[in-house]
Image 1: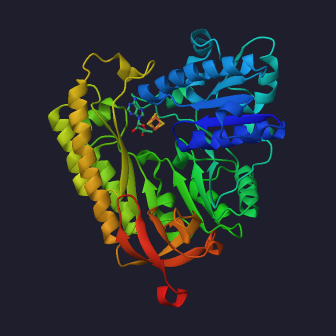
Image 2: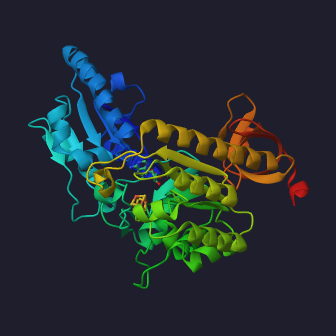
Image 3: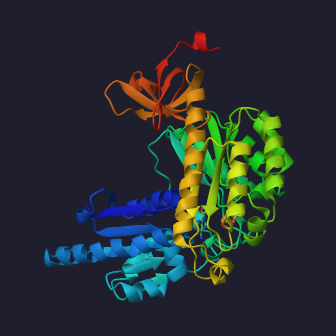
Length: 445
Ligand code: 5AD
Ligand code: SF4
């Protein structure tokens, strides 16, 4: 049997796309493999968001070239496919730089993979079109084995933050229809999925077509998904502060399946830098927004992305970021050193922050965010919380799952609890996850 190895870098949407590419190849008779040496097709689903991520691809391709040579000497063919955002951004450059690559395919064209692979036997192919047909209409049925699943509901971004490649690699904002999302969600639930994370580069700008022909908002979509019997939990990511509409804020109080967790990147706490980033909001506007979200759902856990060392960022600007973090308080966060990306406005700027300064600021910010994360985890000690059991734990007899606030918990329970929501008393906060013990339902009520 033919085998396909698919490796994904970067964001959750890439993980979703990688799974769908595996489905496309599966429909062509390729069994999935985790062993790259056995693969007849190797797909690297790449990320272009920061330089480090993009450069990783070329070192990986160097290794694949050798592997392809070894397999050829053994009489085996290997097709090497570069997909994702580096494929979209660099296209033919990849083929020029790495002779082992057979196919370059962008994020909107991967439903054409079988055809592209077939054609690559004649000559190497690059497909980075934004095709007129919708890839989602051409993908085979989804295969999913877990309790939780991502579901792409929106793609692309019209915001054009000055540092970001996404509007170029993923294109303009496009929303899938409510019917398409509900249809995919129903299939996931039929296969045992209990938690669905609605994903999009700007998911809270969702405006898909509803059954009555009007544009649905994200809360409309959430209600439709929550109505599917078997859906226990809904999450969504990633959101832009300026698209946090009133109905979405209210949804956090009104939709029981919607989990009390919000990933809402602010990037910086300095108004000067936010303006230079073209974020179109200030630090105070973000603070006020958070107040409104907390008024709707007092226990909501917050998460954010931060960039340090954006061009022109001074010590004072960075201090503003630290102040915002102190004031808002985050359960978790991702923070990055600014990385200039070709083609973005910020990359043209001459006032780059020295690497050493970026590193210092990143370390200070991460230390603060770590303290907040640990404090948040410790505050859970002794509480009884609902946990959706996702999988077997690392040790025999254990299972692992997540709290509504996205904290990872492991505890002793039979494997039969996988897929259900159980009450767990949190015993202790460890470095990255909590330990707990199963309690009787009545006790939890
Ligand atoms: N440099 C550093 N971080 C970036 N991000 C996006 N573009 C860049 C860049 N050029 C970060 C932002 C975004 C997250 C997905 O990646 O914080 O929210
Ligand atoms: Fe990039 Fe800004 Fe769009 Fe997020 S909102 S994808 S950071 S341009």
